[in-house]
Image 1 (tube, rainbow, N blue to C red):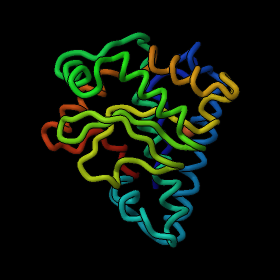
Image 2: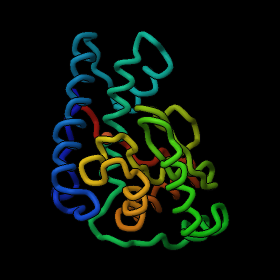
Image 3: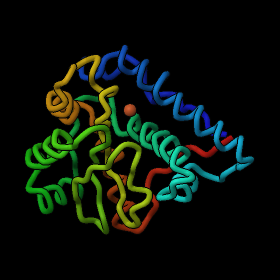
Image 4: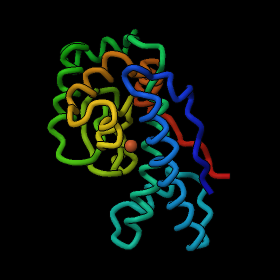
Length: 212
Ligand code: FE2
């Protein structure tokens, strides 16, 4: 079974951009619910998968495993999302990632503008990603629980949650305000750099903790 991973920081660590209340609801309730439902489905099927990545890839695109996919992918997305943020507010990309941002996206300010616009323009629930394919950067969005595990060669550098539960307590309907504040303060550029290296070298990138 999969365990709900602890947050990599205190629930209040991302304030004022994301409140302690939101983090308790988001991690302790929403994320936990995805873990509980996926574990229940796997138990009913008598399956003991080796990894969450395997569950997501094998359940994708099939009506009969849609519920398992939705919940397994949401586990992966949320655990990765927590890792994509750091309380060390205001970091910057460095080294070859910074150079790639200049080359592929026109610089950090243009990356921010495109990332925010992609997230604001996304209809309904989903995720907005900074991703790399063979070292080339792009900004993509996915619907509901969909993620990049089903898109071979596309490695996520970081992701932001567009579901209303991610921002409604703190920002009400202002998704744009949430995304701008998030981008300025919270991205974990060290993880983004490591993911970028994985993209350039054909590596897998960040992997979800294994089931117990
Ligand atoms: Fe979420």
